[in-house]
Image (tube, rainbow, N blue to C red; front, side, top):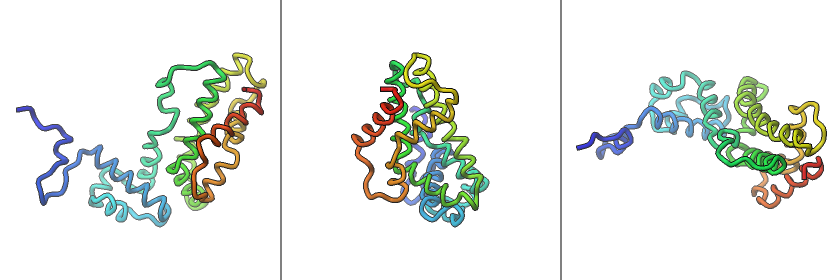
Length: 213
């Protein structure tokens, strides 16, 4: 008979707590941490509350994440929906189309409910814990700008759009124009997300204004 896989051990006998692999425990703790951080704030969150919500002991939590800072780094690092994680997953498009695809992916990511919650958390904690924002910038914002900057540079090399001297600054300008009012509306608690058609229309408006469409 074949040996039981590691995942099968999570189906424990009745009356016994489930047995998880280290990866499964980490994911449960990260989800619990994100829920606690975004609900009551990073400063008010306790390791005890996070462990309780995950259904684990504090000892297990501290074994995997020595402190809240490492835990928050784990939450940010687990953003698997970042559009730049696997840029080769989709076939490359002509420069103008590739720029539109990447810009729309960035805007959609930034406006996602999870990202909005994390952004609110970072704004609220910026003065008390500036390292959170610094880490988030390094792990998320800088990579996102690079993802968009590559497409802008490719478009420029193909003679599409304006001449650009500072690609870093220009990528931020284009992204800001594509987000427009939608980002502020999301951050200030608008009841419903902007319809996909509106988001796409704003992306196209920004690209058209800068001469990419």
